[in-house]
Length: 501
Image 1 (tube, rainbow, N blue to C red):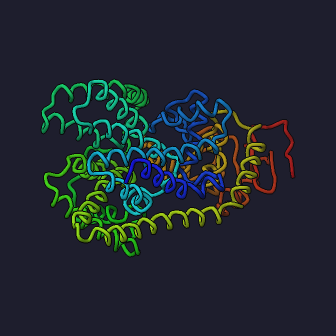
Image 2 (tube, one colour):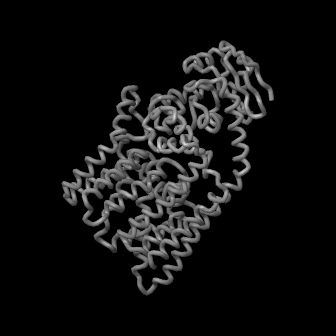
Image 3 (cartoon, rainbow, N blue to C red):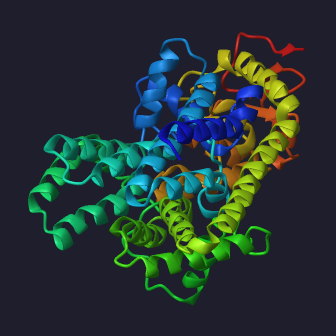
């Protein structure tokens, strides 16, 4: 296929994939914890808090550099929702571009094209899913792939090696989950290829680029908050339960469900991919590095990070499966027909599920926007940046965290989800559970004093938790509408009369 036909096919395919988002123009997955945190973190970065956790106000290892990038455009007046749509579309377009260029270099144009056309299937069933999620990791993937494409060039120049290291450094700053993927590639240069000059150049430039990461670690260390469950050097010896979990997450990283229609083609792809690796010995070292990096990321980080790294190995595994099938010259046409059907299945499933997502949430998005304006109008006059507010985790995560510069005890699962120090995260989670279920006024006052909480927010759709049943007896109502009730502690008198809408 000619270069222009490839460009045409990839462009049309991309437009069909992105079609639902471009047509409806609402951020995909707009109420997911990741997107809500992106909005909150961007808001805090714009106010000069690079390392501050929006939820707790403490410095964490959550990388701020993606949000720093977003903040530049928000300052120019671009709405954050519009920006997230644009970034998600750009991420997928560049992923397709650099993925194709890399696979064409390692295999050929036909294998590269078919593999990229299977990207919806790969992302949904062999990787982290959420293809158009505007998260920091999604933003980093094309950056890393661009560096890998340059790295695989035959006889690269010094300038090209520097550019590779710069791109990898930028990808690492955005998402440190690349630790093993980059480290093992550098180790390959040193121990197997023994290109000492190239290894030294790549390593030195990479370390220079990630200097902000070391400074962030220094800042966190000053607060005694380095320890986090996101990464650990030692989790004990892998046992049968760990191995079982690994296999399940490897075959079904999206939801751990092994009883699904996609398992049939997936198992066939895995089998043919392994056969392709065996048949095409000596295999390319990059896929082996990607597979090894996945295993180490799964052990030392967590399943969330591992599923992200899995997409790189999955791209190569799919390419090997296709190369294995196309090696049977006499059956090339039937193979292309089968692969085309799988491409259409993956694309059709992606488009259909995207429309289903929007059909369920289109009206909710308008309602959600109204709820956001309500909470901003009601809560804004009664808090200062950096205050803690008492609210249910869901209310805080959805309405308060991404819109107002105040903290809460909990936003999602625990503070460890957003890379807070493990001990502090557990303490705050414990305080939240006690507080939200509490009926004793003295205990409520004790925890509120601990975090200097003066304001509480009750959503009328909140579950009837104990504290919100009893709080009206003790705290003063300062704002009330059809969606929210806002209380002030009685020792914090306000000159503002309660507004009842």
